Image (cartoon, rainbow, N blue to C red; front, side, top):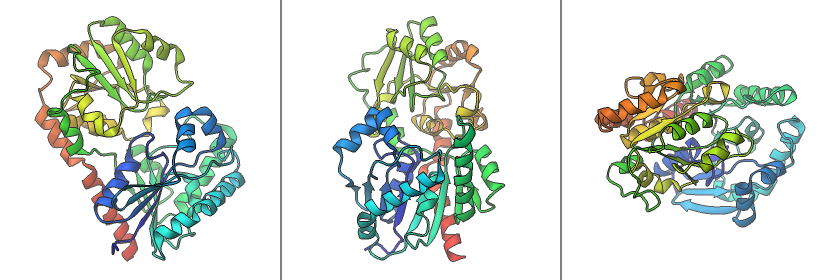
Length: 387
């Protein structure tokens, strides 16, 4: 049995949901010898009603599955709705999760004291239940953005309690770091990162059949197609440049700029393949000429450290982005333009050749790998355990 402490990780996504920091941290920790139990997101009944993919996973999947050596995922039961509107409901839901998963968690721990790794404010109700060595709040978003009234106040209250009680806080964006540091002095900044070896396969991989015959230029986006993405900008580019192909990879979510989404689905030079398995993404990027970071301007995208930025760098492909504080640090590597200037900027990138600056992009990506991110996180955790 591993001598390293086990990690009990409460995620803000399902394992097969939006791929990002949660899964990458779990993979890195298990790769280092920690046994990791990845508890998938708490989902109220309203979420299962709203999101068919999530509902399907809850209907068809086992509660406990081994992902790979030293890594398991567990699915919590459906919970009472409205947990961001009433702290009591949130606490009741935490008790439901604790009771329903108690056998799985205790069998995983086998009397050992874990590192408790949490990604959402409501997870603070899980603290103290498992005699953890250290508690970590890994804050990758500002959960009050887009909320108002009572919901905002409840989230602020939950997070204030989390910041007060957690031994270590990790924040990914600079703005989030500054906000959390003011309330929790033991806050450390760790931006998103990239699985550099994985995305580097784009340099030599064969494109999948769906896009293998596309003519250049191919503009590619991969990620959550939701309220952070400027869909109107993508429509305008596709309409102005019918000889360009836009490949937009990822799940779409209801309620966000439905008019632009409907138009994208109609345009013959726009492909929307949906969610692509993480293991297959490098093959898709093998066909990309330019990678896109088309953020809306506003709070929806402001507070996050864009995972896609580092993954794009690891493909070696040129990148264009709308203004974003986390991207501006890389303005020597990324073309940053207002949305109205994107067509001209992309034309310039294509004119200069898509291999220009490739080695520099790859070199910088290696400095921002998940290996290095998790090394730093474990250093902070081990210092806290020693203290």
